[in-house]
Amino acid sequence: ILNIHDAVTVAAGGFHTCATKLDGTVQCWGQNNQGQLGTGAFGIPQPLGVTVVNLTNATAMTSGYCNACALKPAGIQCWGALNPTDICKSNLGHGSLAGSGSPVNVLVPDH
Image (cartoon, rainbow, N blue to C red):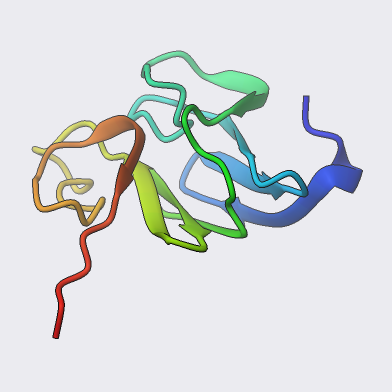
C-alpha cells in the first residue's frame, strides 16, 4: 500500500490516479476498465494502490483519460487504452492501436 511519504509524483487520470514512489516503482488505484492500473489485467477497480507490473526506475508520471505513462532514465513506458474502438485508441505511442494492461515502450523516431 502506498505510504504518502514514499510518493514523489502523483498524476490523476479520468477515473484513476498513479504515484511514483521513492524506489522508482509506481502504484495506481481507481477504475481499471482500460488497463490503466498497469496490473496486466483489466476490469477490476482497486480502491488502494496496486504496483504497476514490470516497471522500475520511474522518475515521474502522467495520466490520461484511460492510460498512464512513466518517465524513466532510458525512455517512456505507457499502459492502458485497451479498447481501440473508443476515444482511447492509439494513446500508448508504441506503433499500434492496441492497448496494454502492462507497460510498453514508447517508440521515439530518430530525426
